[in-house]
Image (tube, rainbow, N blue to C red; front, side):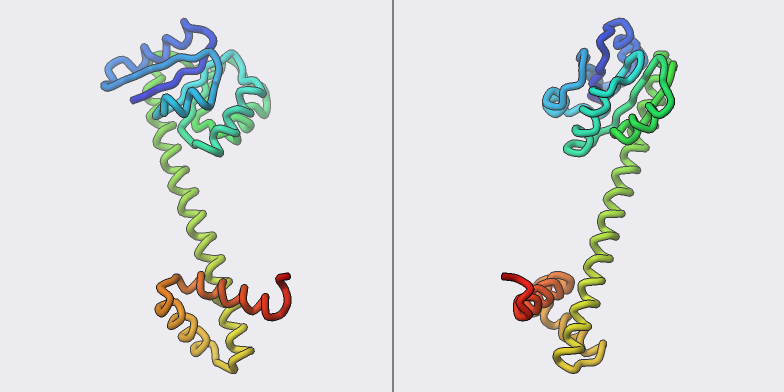
Amino acid sequence: MRVLVIDPDPARAALVAEGLAGVHPLEVRRSARFDEREAAEFAPDVVVIAAESPDRDTLESLREASQANPRPVVMFVDRSEPGLAEQAVRAGVAAYVVDGLAPARVRPILDVAMSRFALTQQLRGDLAKVKADLEARKTVERAKGLLMKERGLDEDGAYRLLRKLAMDRGKPIGAVAADLLAFAGVLKGDAS
């Protein structure tokens, strides 16, 4: 397990490594502040941020890093203020623990955070696929409507024609439908 600990306090950061004693293989690297380039180079399995209280710069750096290179992040803070937990979660933090950095709690919290992160990533992937499938289905429906209008086909005939075009071209039916709609738009003068 590769763990990147972000903490300006070496004594507090050492509690994380102490809590992971017995994990093999284990590589823990400590840094005083979050640096996306350093994090990308180290490629940790989990990032642990320990601080008295999260600051805006850290949360903003995390938000930017999470969009480009998502990874599980656990944040241990000594104190929190209303709204900071929500901001941390929006920045990509998988576990936000207030006043709970004790060596005995580190490993279970990291395990849960990594599992939650994996589940969240899977759900995001599934959601993206569902959205893409829905968009392709809408495109096929619009293309069928165009074929029904322009070629006088019924709905089943329009679908069969789209499916044949897709098989002939070795493309997904959604891509063929999108091409058909784009060409129809050109013929109507929608594109210049």
